[in-house]
Length: 257
Image 1 (cartoon, helix red, strand yellow):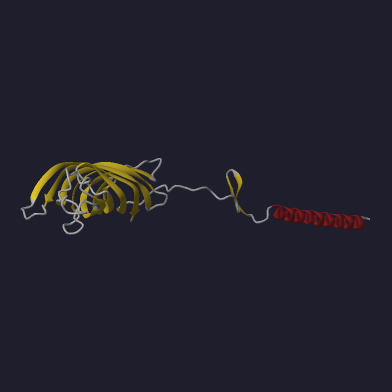
Image 2 (cartoon, one colour; image 1 turned 180 degrees about the horizontal axis):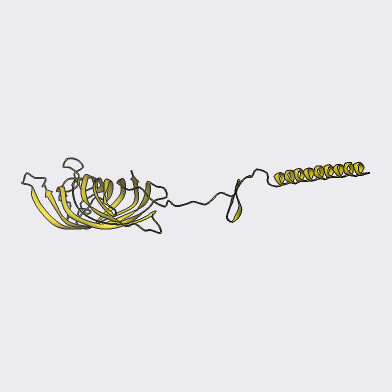
């Protein structure tokens, strides 16, 4: 009787263990099917079991950079300048190199090409000066160059490092040739050069680490020195005028490296 009872107990324990093992395997299979495509890794700490999961969720929106490149920059600036007092060629296409001196302090140097299609009224002359020559007072091509250098302060905004306000001050000089004598000569004025102080500022927006776009506006203050050459044989004459103008540069691209 005793041996029979022991055999019966062993049989019951074996059946119970097999049932529990089968139930555990079934629950594990159902758990794996409930989260397809998800890999789960867990670690146990003082706050219990913690898991990390990775899956294909919604794509995040655009994220602005939390910092931008410093050191050096090459900038393209275009396209317009205006002379309020004295004449300035209207098309200006410039490139400048900028060097970071310390934190927000930068130095820069640049060169620009100057172009226009203009005549004696644009040049602030009282008359053409060649009225006796048929067709001589039409507009002609103006071409020249501009060189400049200066200092720039570029602010760092802790909450928005991708937005960079800028203030500038510098010294520049330019020279341009007016339409030449012979056929298409438009007026007696032959050429002009200037020296000027320029100050202003703008801003840059950096959607990525090293490339920014923005706007610059600068005021020019100085003088313009012109050479006039009459058609009849005579000595060239010189004249000087106060210069006040503005550079309006809404297409600025800055690359940092």
